[in-house]
Amino acid sequence: MKVPFVSIGKQYEFLRKEFTEAFDEIGMSGQYIMGDNLDNFEKEIANYCETEYALGVANGSDALFLALKAMGIGEGDEVITCPNSFIASAWVIESTKAKSVFVDCLEDYNMDFNKLEKAITDKTKAIIPVHLTGRPAPMDEINAIAKKYNLFVLEDSAQAIGARYKGRRVGGLGDAAGFSLHPLKNLGVIGDGGVFTTNNKDLYETVKKLRNHGLKNRDECELWGFNSRLDSLQAKLASIKLKHLDSWNNRFREIANMYRDGLSDLVHTPKDLSHEEPVYHNFVIRVDQNIRDNLMSFLLQKGVETKIHYPIPIHLQECAKNLNYSNGDFPLSEKYALEMISLPIYPELSNQEVEIVIKSVKEFF
Ligand SMILES: *Cc1c(COP(=O)(O)O)cnc(C)c1O
Image (cartoon, rainbow, N blue to C red; front, top):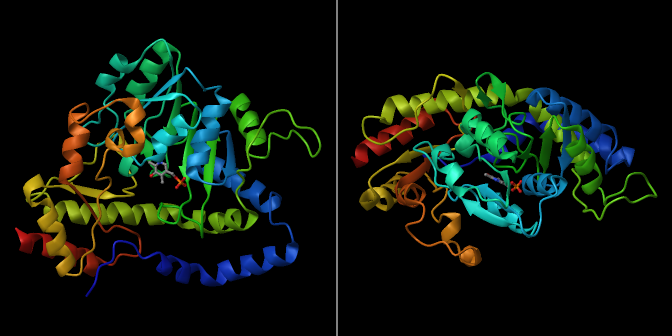
């Protein structure tokens, strides 16, 4: 029996009837860009994220990039984020021509707020905490520092839709947030998609124009903009899926608990903190770096597919040479990159499959 790392087709199969009806309805309507389906989804997702405003955009990276543009960030500015994230957390900064500055992570892969103040200079304009693996970053500590230095906080919520921090959903915990609707994320569409959320009316109004060529109405253009809209079709599919998200996220947590119960004696597993409700976009275990690759190959032989999120920290990527960082600058991010393994986790994974993963890891040890 094989346990694949992802199995996206199963979710399509589950929703097939509703999806094909949506294709047909939108195909016949001719309203492919903007319109009611997008407006409705934006209301639903703002409501879900407990924010005043939401906008559908082309992808999660654009949600972050357009947020930075709306904050007025550009050449000469610095923005702080994490080196142990997906590359997009940093390229969105570089694309504004601002400079990416990194701070190392905590034991749970989120931003180490203790190191944040040292990274702030008089050029710093914003902080992008990443809710990595679907676990909320330590927002109270980060917000307190941001307030002290008058900085924007932009949540990279790509991996954490639905997660709660001290009772509140991610997406409304800073000045603005970006979510990804990439098929691999907890709420994924059939292609690319993203969502920008905020409680700040000015940021909302600006991103609303920026994503649509900078137009303020059909004929008048206020700003040099971009074309970064969420298609009506994807918005409709996202609306259909959103109804299931809480139960899917519960299943992510259920699987995480099974892995933790089965494996925490043998490998490092993430701990649940009482003030958090993570959504386990990834379930990351850590083992000694000398055995990590062997364990992955062993699991693959057993039919269990695993991945690494992420094997090369951003500051060590070829594209990041301009930032002049080197190996040793972010010791925990670098160490964890050599120790981490992401186990299969998605709502459609059966208990039997989870047991196979656990049994296979045990067999290796
Ligand atoms: C997926 C992801 C993004 C980018 O989202 P896209 O929709 O692929 O552009 C950004 N940040 C993090 C942490 C991600 O995991």
